[in-house]
Length: 166
Image (cartoon, rainbow, N blue to C red; front, top):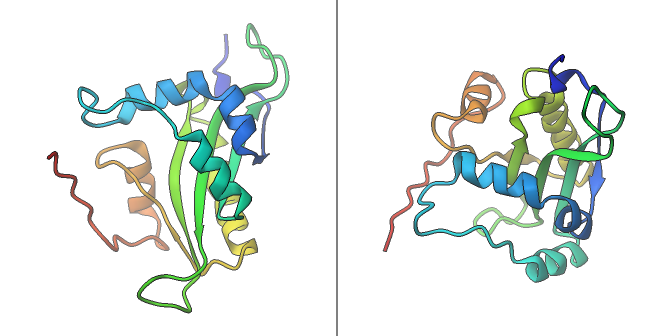
């Protein structure tokens, strides 16, 4: 069978409710692949707060959907996502409207094609459409996303965030 990354995938806006209903298996795969400190952290999205943030217009989510049958794969399968927080005014730079990417993930079966790049371009376009002047991506050190962002001329390391277990 050919790689699932060759399947027809559509990138479209998604609601928090749609992600909650269709994303559980993908969220689990994402967590198991890259979450640090899994022994002391559990995957437990706070859907109520996500919905409140969505109602306030401060989050947008893009989803990658496998949309046509492909080999043994059935259509309408969620295969990637990008959830993003809109920050209308930076606390230190009041005139700066920016977007902070909360999570970006593409299932391993869909990597190697154009899905991740299309999802990232769609995220940038959606951020610009919302008036953002900056997009902050969060990547774990040593991941594929870290490698991709490190090669982009338009991306710079602005902050380093250290996590301390208390």
